[in-house]
Length: 94
Length: 94
Length: 161
Length: 161
Image (cartoon, rainbow over all chains, first blue to last red; front, side, top):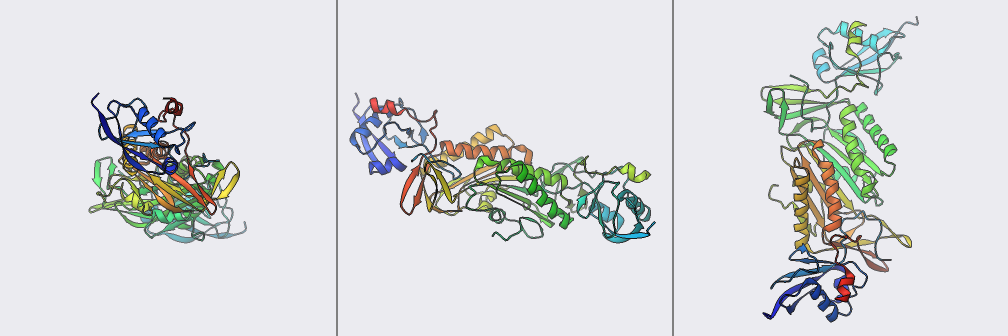
């Protein structure tokens, strides 16, 4: 073990609203994956409900899978399915 | 025979330039077709060379075939293949 | 904006924002446009040569009614299309200026706006009575489009009649 | 105009003439654009209801790099495409205002400008990190797009890890 690393976490849209924060710095054990970081976020942010929802993660502005190992200084974004543009007919609320 | 009828003839683009006129009123025998009118125009306008070329005719702003019978007051336009728009790669001169 | 002509032959400079405004409506979430722009060179049988400017001539009354007819053809083929506008400029045009603009508005992007826009420019080039003259320092030439077999008269019939 | 950004997230009002200028060049005779416009009603599970306005949020840095990536994908699929520009507005938008504009320029209209423009809006809606919030007098809701199976993480994996 080489100790902790610092990463920046960003939330967007519904996730940001639920959590009540948009960005924070977090320390995770060296060797942690994106999945492990998300578990930490869920544990420390009980208002953030991810059960049964599709969520995306991006590391340094590129889409990432759960097993990616984080590096010192990584910027990790967590967000719901995107909905840019305007001609969409249905929405996922309900 | 019920005598002559008057029609208006319009020429466009190359045909107008070759003929040296853009519009004139012509008298044709009642019952004349578009084809007969064109023969008259060729005979009275020797500078207008139509041999071997595609030409169009419109009567009262609608495309017409050669056998259409003209009516008093018809407006007959004669013109070369159209070339509106801008992205065309080749031209038919040469 | 509802009172502007949707099918127009004009000597005025064309604007995409203007043509889009002519089809805009709160019900339409998708607008596709096409702009035909005067290119800086034209390929001829003798190779490329620079175009200084173009001059367009139209049989304006017939051209506007043919543009409207293309709009009707689109409504028949793509019934979800909400509105169509087609503008063609005539007179002198410089390189880089649009000569033709088309806008098609639909409720959603899958309702035919792309297909109808493509159809409109193909039909315009085939049937709308407009002619292009290319001009250079040393001369000019009228551009003739390809012959439309179903529309062109038979010239031999003209000569021999 | 050559120095304007071709891929941009902005709070400014969008203009089709502006996005077309960003791809213009004397070599390109055809420009296709697409505008996604805020519609006046949205279909919900409970039927139609009026939208008062929309609010768009973006992960701007990533969104601009994804827009540029879509431009690269287009160049690969349609090598004759000369230039692509994609602009997305964020912040508050009223009904009738465009939220997204796409412009694709090609030498000729058969060189892929229609196909590439359609591709760009489909890809934008699938991968670019932008979210839409619909607002009414009595509330608001975040719109979520369909799940993208190849990109979305598995939520059960998150919960049980």
